[in-house]
Image (cartoon, rainbow, N blue to C red; front, side):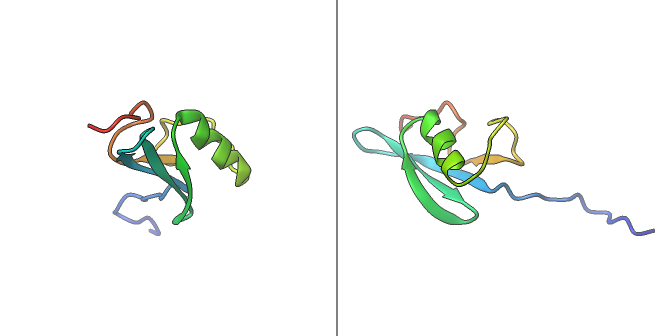
Length: 78
């Protein structure tokens, strides 16, 4: 057998970190482990991804985007 007993863990190319206080509040976006943008809204995530050649079809897919400190609708500090 060539199967591995442990599940496959995939790492998404896009990581959106937790909300930072500011006027307006923002989140840091990483692509392939590098900080690429300060995003202030969901549309900023999509346009930044597109600028790096990534088409996002499902923002809720953890294999595509990892949301840290909240989900795609979290844009104000807790």
